[in-house]
Length: 118
Image (cartoon, rainbow, N blue to C red; front, side, top):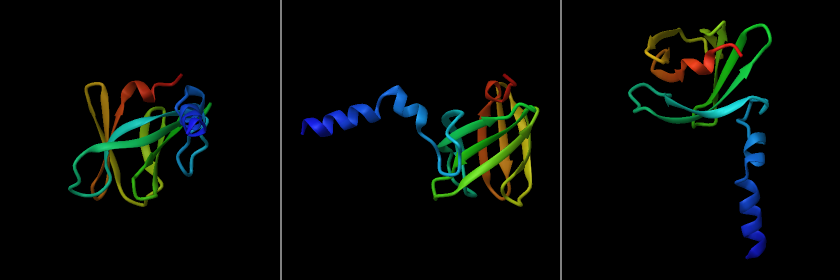
């Protein structure tokens, strides 16, 4: 019983959280959660996500879609320009949030501060 408690305590430490990763991501960048809907007509929910930044100003947001797939949204200078889907991508700014739409019905809400170059 004490071994189980110790194992659970280790997995809940900040050090363990830093090495957590989504399938298909490198685990070396900012992990978090974003509001999302991954199917047409689906209510918004919370999806696990990882932001991967590159020195050239580009970045990739990897979002776990909940069905075993990961949606990669590619940004250049903070603007979403493509995904790992062949579908059309559009976006709009709503205050401090960028809302990204991937046809036919995916929606992702990203705080603009997360897209700022660091």
